[in-house]
Amino acid sequence: MRAARLIKMVLLLQSRPAMTAAELARELEVSERTVTRDAQALSEAGVPVYADRGRAGGYRLVGGYRTRLTGLARNEAEALFLSGLPSALREMGLEDAASAARLKVSAALLPSLRDASDTAAQRFHLDAPGWYQEPVTPELLPAVAEAVWDDRMVKARYRRGGPGSEVERELAPYGLVLKAGVWYVCARAGTDFRVYRIDRFAAVAVTDERFVRDEDFDLPAFWDERAAQFARSILRTEVTVRVSEAGVGRLPHVVDRSAALDALDAAGPPDVDGWRTVVLPVESLDVAYSQLLALGPELEVLEPADLRTRFGTAAERLSDLYR
Image (tube, rainbow, N blue to C red; front, side, top):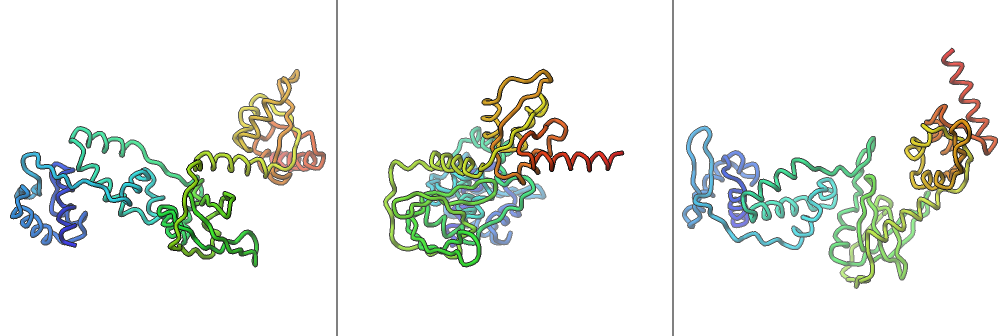
């Protein structure tokens, strides 16, 4: 334990011009007295640790000393590729590995490159969950992530829908996807590849059996294809609307973007008033009602008749409110 701490202390001092005893104690999770003893032990072992006395003092390495102890462990290297996703690392249980990897890379960089790395870190941050969404960490995510990293089979119970709908599956988990704050695993079940929401797993047991990956499997391409299929599958009905010029620009922002753009491309030219008639695929009439109301007077529903009636009723009620 102490040897690992001493190595980390050297790497910390190598990555920065100087550090106070309080800063080192916080990073190493020890007392300042322990930091003092460790610095003395390093000095006695030939590592040129110099202690600056006084209120602004601290510890630094003398003469540009550099250690070669910068090799990454496997889990640290894997975590490094996700270092821009701190919430994802934390949820998968890789936060400590990522921290160690960043420290080793920082220690290995020349000072000028280290400054560039720090500059980038302070100018770019990726926040995966959508607005107005509380991030939910599935309890079984670390177990699934472990199986993904190690190419190990899992035995799982999965909830497909309502009560009593649990099914047992033996899966080869190929990859994880974080979409709008929701975690999914892309896995092979038998000969088919499928997508499972991790928060719907009732139980996951990681086995000792390893699976051989299909070399042709491409996680981003697979996910894009399945996401597009899902988006198309839920658009089960159509509505016909007239949309003003202003409404045309806003339509892709209130309904499915791809569906709106395709519908606008297929629509005819504007009429004499500058409005366009668009046949729009939607998930349901209820969903269309709540979404299309956002366009207010920039949209008129033509068909179906019952949806047009609902919009007319809403318009009358709004008119009564503002008289």
